[in-house]
Image (cartoon, rainbow, N blue to C red; front, side, top):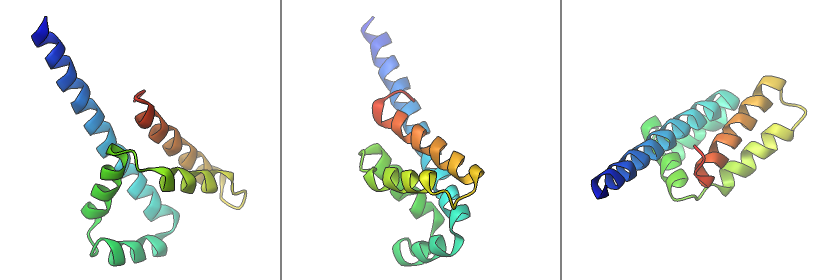
Length: 106
């Protein structure tokens, strides 16, 4: 029974890691599509032009739950009526995925 519990923990941790990585990748893609020039500036100044570093920074923040800035950004996008419906929906979807990661409901 003990081995079964240990395996369950390993599977659970792998699932969380996979979901956090996928979410980080999706947030990065959304940022690029939402404001390409701002994203490219960020990439050059914060990540040495390396997309994988950008995704890793997001992943790390998600894993340690340092996501207030991401949540605030999604809330701003989702509630701005100047953004098209599709963009607001995508921001809302990513917001809820991030929320589910933080609450362990992923």
